Image (tube, rainbow, N blue to C red; front, side, top):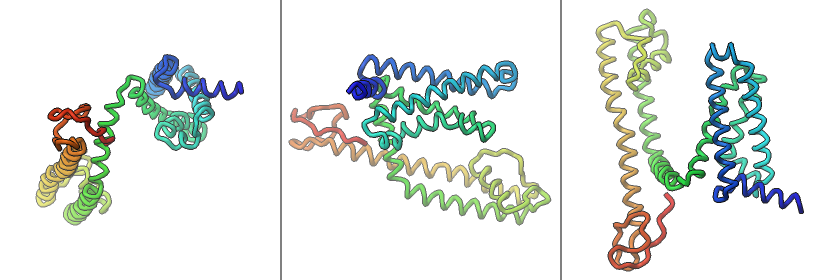
Amino acid sequence: MEETSLRLKLRHIIFGTDTPAGQRFDQLLLIAILISVAAVMLDSVASINRDYGAILRIVEWSFTILFTIEYGVRLWVSAGPARYARSFFGMVDLLAILPTYLSLFIPGAHYLLTMRALRILRLFRVMKLIPLMKEANFLMSALVRARRKIGIFLFSVMIVMLIFGSIMYVIEGPEHGFTSIPQSIYWAIVTITTVGYGDITPVTVLGQAIASLAMLTGYAIIAVPTGILTAEISQAMVRRRFERECRHCHLHEHDEDAGFCRRCGHELPEPPDS
């Protein structure tokens, strides 16, 4: 009985954000995350690592042990441990502790602890910014609806990269740095995406002409996914407006947080969770 009471109390503190104790817990957790991430970043600076590396490593392991205990407690007090472990925050909490243990077998793996910064997303819950999460979900739903169009577009871009890479391999050849078709495709990707590292450059006049065409193609390619996503967001906004249509007078132009129709005063349906 005492164990059940303790689990319920800890559950309210760890998973609850409406209680003072829960808010203080999340705030302290955020501070601990920021300090641990800062320690990992400082450890990557050679001069700081040389002078304070041992101290930073102790700090790193201390926070890892603390977060490991916290993760275990979350599993213990959760109403559904398996569901929590498979959830987004559950996987983020696990990833926040794994790199330190991996560093025992893979040198340098502890620098991946910067992934702990993902846990700062809990700030949306602590600061009552759930509406922003809804807007993020709205954007994500638009991306999901456009996935086939974007997938076909990316496949087409891959074919264009292959063609440009193969042409440049034939024109420039190994003597000018284009040692293979994969290397030439790498050049095409860097050029068409307008990154332009400059580690491989065409020398011949024909090669430079093809490169100019690739650059112009890059600007056209960049605009396509933006247009696809913009059109999908626009359609989603129209759908969301019509889903708030008044059942009495059929007026659909209402604010998302409106509770009653601005024309006839009848109650509006709940806004969709986009």
